Image (cartoon, rainbow, N blue to C red; front, side, top):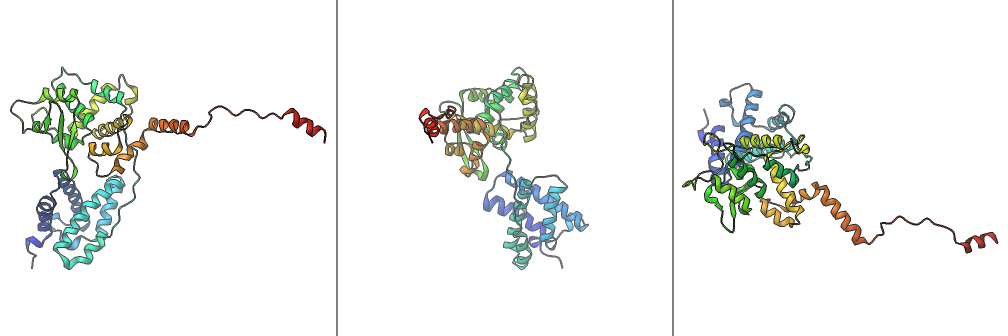
Length: 336
């Protein structure tokens, strides 16, 4: 006897995405896509291991050893980092928690999966561009080209706001205020809104690409008029980095992604003396600890702190004088 659809793996997967993630938690479309991709990879792996079509997978197939095998597959076969492994585990764990709420009879099976721990991952130092490097990349854009104005507006916007690429691509004309006080409304992780100020240059660049009567349209579009994608932004940025590298050799060996522009904004704000808590709100970080990572990445800031500490300590930087015995000491020793 087959289980009702609402109690099947397919039915519970549908309720997880439609009822729990979207309606109960109200997560962003980006989170839905991330969880979708993780579960799709897990189901493909599971079907291959069980040697049966994905449509025939059942709840009994979702065991802790299968999840551990999948996580090992993510790292060893797909070549992903421990950070990606932990992200995949978070998606599976969230789904299993949903299963536990709907199917208490398998509490032990689900509990063993929920007991799987994250893998400790080394946190890499954020890569960023110095202000002169960022200016060189933006200056590489030819405004006379077909999409020169769009590309210039996009890169200046990313550097000005430190927005995640998903946040930038979701901006509509109605989210902008291009007169004083110039600002943009961004929708970040967890559907949290924040307001970022805009430079006059950014406002001018954005004004050039806004179409009349298109307040609800997405701002950044591709050649066919469709919304620009993350891959499209990465391609454009790489192209201008290669052009800029002709005059800025330091860029030749750099891998500059859209997220590097976000890191570059954060470091530039720190270099300008902006308080870390302000930068946290500017970038939309959940914790100031995340923002503090940028302090550890900038060597010049460390040098400045060391110099300030040296001056504050009042230590004499001059070389110590060579010790010479006094004439009285020599006379005393000679008379012994």
